[in-house]
Image (cartoon, rainbow, N blue to C red; front, side, top):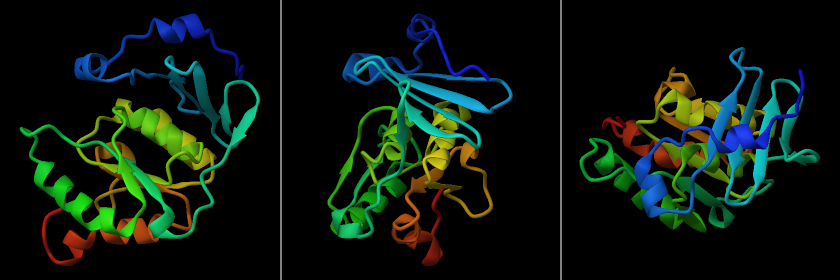
Length: 193
């Protein structure tokens, strides 16, 4: 498989999410081979190409191998998520997630694109990520990036695929503590949507 990709082709890729273009500087493009062996995530604002090949690792641009962060303590960790707009049914659950996670960590960031948030987890810039109501095309590249960088990715709901629309991703040291904190509602018998 050739790892070279024409950046002009990526830059011309349609960008999904008009609010992301209007309201933020975040407008990444994803590209993946149909056999799901190689995935690319391009951030034109920084001219960074994140890519992974199944079984061959995760890379930045042409030469920098990526690994998830090595952080082990929740109080030192910085997580990322997407916050749904008010009309989404998942807003109450997300606000409860934030209420549980923020006191336990160093911070939560909202960048603007699930795909780029996952690329940043793969690069160790964020220690973890979670979100609900996503489409497979929003996260397919990022899921492979995180896994190939040594991270864990699971569906937010037990027994679901991360591409089903709700996922959690982190390094192996923080994954359980992060998941336990976010899924505290489920343990209390409430819906996690």
